[in-house]
Length: 253
Image (cartoon, rainbow, N blue to C red; front, side):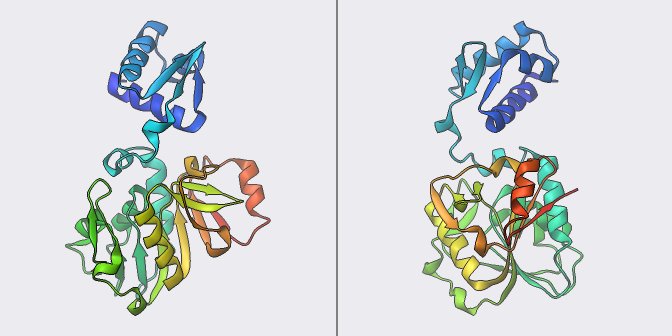
């Protein structure tokens, strides 16, 4: 494993566990303690982690919301499995919304052969992915959020009331049973709120690292969400908790 790959793996582990012992890292990465220390020294200089006695912890302020280019390659296998499962819920003739986000972007790759499909989106990568397909594309008008490659502040040009969206596939940065889904950016959150109001069925596509997080801006309680599609790393206790509420939790294979 190359140094950059090791460092990326360290960050991914810390985003899940927040604090990791040095012994855990050497075992997980199959490296010597000297090699590990070189990686940790570099990540510390970059301000991404902080050394503590016997281990390291993530610096939360650096990871409020990472840029979409970083998220496109993080937990990619899980996101692809989630997207493939989402695509199985999309039928010929549907009008769907695909949200901006690294997980929902992957859905576009699996739906190109659907017939008479209309995709409404605020994601420039989704538009680019589907541009040469037979899918009818509608992009909402507004301000470009460059670091997310999305269109926000929709009220400039677009009238949501004219949409007849059957299924909306949206992203989120946090999911809790008590507070529902949440995000870091107010403009993204407002767009998702509006889409939830206008759509008949709501699907949240989120990898398992999003559970247990309640971040800056509340989007919607779980009562407004029909399905959450996540990966196989979801906690078993969490899966059991979802059996007690109306939101359906789907585990992607």
